[in-house]
Structure formats: structure tokens, C-alpha cells
Image 1: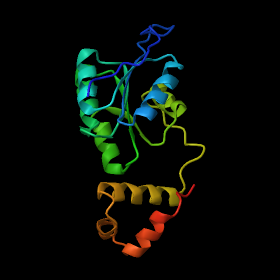
Image 2 (image 1 turned 90 degrees about the vertical axis):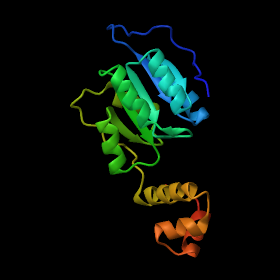
Image 3 (image 1 turned 45 degrees about the horizontal axis):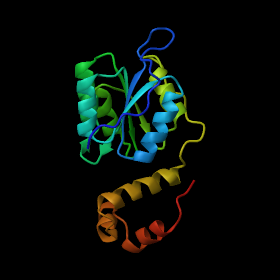
Image 4 (image 1 turned 180 degrees about the vertical axis):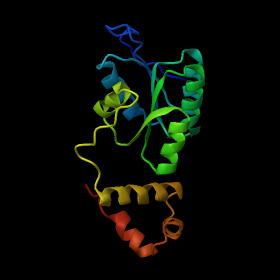
Length: 191
């Protein structure tokens, strides 16, 4: 898929002369467009891409100062874009977004050059804070973190989707009874 270009602010630098170019890579088009508008409102010059291929092409064309990249994309892994960005522009600050967070993936993202790792749903304020934070800054704890029940539900949903919505296979992989899984899937997401 070709790279789309969102309307930009026209300026690549802020008042202090810092490069404010930002690449957003996510295959969720509504989320991508909302985030692009929100980040433009915070002074970034935004380009968007909906796939690993388009993200890599955008990095090759002009490596941005900042990048926000989804981990799992339809055509591959967003970490490939982070790795290429760090090769082209070592000072770039990349944030990896994912609904599939785990420690091993977070470690891989940081080793490949990601500056931060945020779990979806992350809002524009959290993303801006991560991009603007200094190299030794510790992230501020979220005001409304997901509950343990919500984290469990998200994990079950992820495995269910990865198993092509096959209840029996999902139950086997999660080590739970199929009927228990069906009851969980039938309920609304916890808060």
C-alpha cells in the first residue's frame, strides 16, 4: 500500500529550531488519522504510513526526528521500521505502540532503538510526553491504568484473534476449558 501524506503544518522545526518531523505507522486507519490530527495540533509535521513497506519507504525518503509505530502491522513487524530508522538517523526518537505488550517484545523494541513502549490504547498526550521526555526521564504512571481484569481480557482477545477466532484452539492455547472461554468471550470488556 502506498504511503499517505496527512496535511502538515508546513514547518519542520519548532520555535527553538528543533526538527519536529513525525512518522506515524499503524494499520488502523481511523486511529492513524485521529492521531495525525492530534499530533499536528501539538506542532509536529506528520507523515503517515499504513504498513511496514510504506513505513520503510517513508524512512528512506526522509528519516523523521520522531516516529510512533504500531508493533503488529498487516504486512509484518513494526520493529523493522524502528531498526531502519535508527540506521538512517541514530538520533531519532521512536515509540512503539501495541495492544500485545509483553516484556520480551518491549526489550526487543528498546534494543532495536525504540525510546519507549506504550500499550494501546495510548492517547496523544501520552505519546507526546513519551516523545518529548529526556533520555533519562522516567515515564509518568498512567492516571487510569487498565485493571488486571481488563489486561486479562485483552490478552484473551488477542489470542482469540491470532487463532482466527477459533474457540477450541484458543482455549487449548490458553489452557482453559472451552466453555469457560465462551463465557468470557460473551461478556463485555471489563473496565
